[in-house]
Each structure stands twice: as C-alpha cells, then as structure tokens.
Length: 206
Image (cartoon, rainbow, N blue to C red; front, side, top):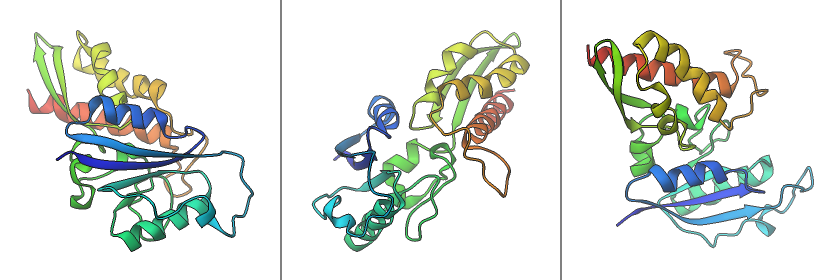
C-alpha cells in the first residue's frame, strides 16, 4: 500500500514540493492538498474554522505560513497520531528541520523520510570526470535530481563548485530568512548540503 501524504499550504505555497514528491517519490501518494487563502487575519482565534479534523494519512506536511494555523494543525496531528513535518518552524510536537532538505532519516517519517531529506548521491567517475549520478535521497522540491544532468562531464572539482549554485537556482526557500544562530539562510543551507552529498558520492567511488 502506498505511503499517504496530506499537504496543508496557503495559496500554493507547497506546490513545487508536492510536484517533486509526485515525480520522484516511490510508493508515495499525495492523497490530499488543503490549500488555504494567503490573506488571513494576523491573529486567528478560531483556527478550526480553517482546518478541521477531517483528514487522514501516514504523514502531514505543513507548508502553512500562518503560525496560528500551523500550531493548530500540529495539535490536531498529535491528537490523531499522525506525524507532521513543519520545516523551518519551531513548533512543539512537530518534526521541524531547518529546511526540507535538512530532514534526517527518521522512522516516524516512513517512506517519505527514506526518500526525501538530506541528499545522498551515488557517483560514477571515468577518466577524472563524472559519468553518472544516481540520487538515493533528495530534496522534495526535486532540485537534487534536476541538477544531476548539469554535472555530467565535469571534473570533481568543477562539479563540487557548481552543484551548490545550481541547486540554489532551483531552491524555493526564502533567501532572506537567516537563522540567527548559524547566520545562514535556507538557500545557503540547501546549497551546502548538496555540496557535502556530492563530495561524499565522489569520495565513495574513488
């Protein structure tokens, strides 16, 4: 039986990741997408008017922008026993990596966690140049897969220099959302985890 994902978003805020999951996921279905309006009151006293308990799945992805809605959604998921991933947020009861491509391998995330999160590459080299790249795990936006064709034929040095930049061109993270602790934005983080993944892939084949 496919692993069922339910998505909550506002004005299409998660469409790129939903599309990536559908395209690159295996035995995973996006069962339902709840798309809420973007323009909402700054304070929502009754979030149940927007999000009811009428959903079910193996995992919920929270791409909501409104904190009141996200907190309500997490409470509902905890009540229903459904794990919820709220990347970039700080909500008790949710799995909250810094970015979607920063998710570690967590049993609670099921098939999604096996296939999506911190990227992993298998690399084939010939005569000092990249001949092939296979993605074992990647970002739900699909950037991990989409950059591979751009790296074929490059030397390892050229590819390592290029991969972070190419991923950032495709990344949908907010470049202005700097983390006060690390001083990095989600965009920079996405580039760096892909550089690390490619270095590991190249090292493993040499």
